Amino acid sequence: MMQEIYEHAGREAPRECCGLVIQDGNNEKYIPLENISENKNEFMIDPKTFVKYQLISKIKYVVHSHYGEDSCPSENDKIQCREVGIPYLIVSYPDKEYTILQP
Image (cartoon, rainbow, N blue to C red; front, top):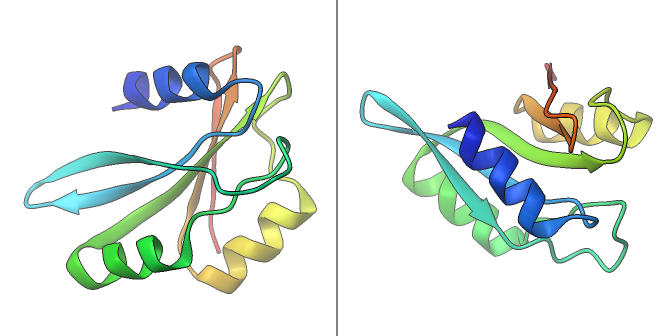
């Protein structure tokens, strides 16, 4: 699954990619989503899409990338993660490191 996330980050670079890791039966599955933010250094998931996945599955992680930076969460990441109440999986690209941020 991490390879899928890094590939998505590569396709979206230099913009941040975003997506969700959901529980699909006994497996985790990565769902790549469109970043609707107008700022290439931020991500925004369409609220309707996010609610849809909340209703039909268990969201394990909110995923996004940091291009050309490390995977350490920004202050904004920390605030949003707490507000959403779902762990963030932040990947760095092209370095291919990751950080899990708990709410």
